[in-house]
Length: 316
Image (cartoon, rainbow, N blue to C red; front, top):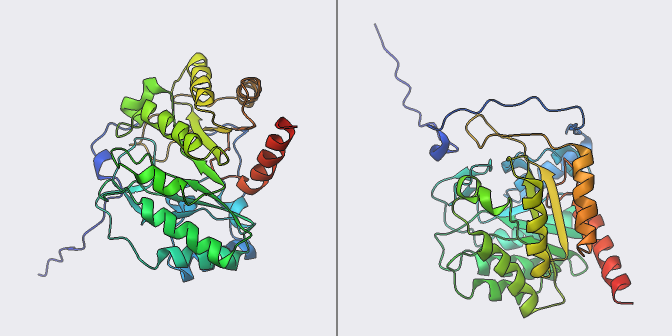
């Protein structure tokens, strides 16, 4: 008798979540419906990503809008690999020890941007706490490569917090992206469980510093709702962002990736999202996107045009 033993090492995507209590996945309400992928253009986008050996947050984070965006050749590149050094309770991106940086990645990203014909591109990354500068120089090189190959493409970056990385923020801002985005993700009372590796007021200060270094750069931040936060906490968060002169806020519904991720406490109704939008505009944001399916890079190109127009109108 021969006994076969499977010695294949199975990679655990979220090792820190394996032993957490299970939180059942709630059924989505009628107002959360997304377009499935599979169109010819969607497949072309996927092939361009594959040919250039790139990673997208669309795929890694399980974005619900991937079908719609990729069918328009809109993809958000995630640089510095597919493995994050943080272990946020909401996030579907893989956690662990990252691979070394790919020195060819900035040029590969730029080549894909040109091939996709993007007028506006969003570049994000995993957290790289293992790097001395948190990956700041890699952001700079990616921005420079895109500008070299596609000089008319506007660039939006969605960065980590560069916590305890002295000089990193200044380096990225001096590369002059058109939009600097850094997400708060949730209200401060939820940080310990939702975003334990981050510090709320550090993130607020980071956004404020961007404006102090270069007031011409648009700043942006986003949160998810549905963690059990209170309305007054969201309104206070808006005030904190406005005190840092942030131009654009995005608010979207948290969707629980697996039963071991943070519990989805509630589905926020479209009317509540509309109310948040009204409040945010009243507080002075130039641009607000507040819907259940809002994500940081969803409709980013169209929103950038509206953001420019809003600034011009405010300056008249």
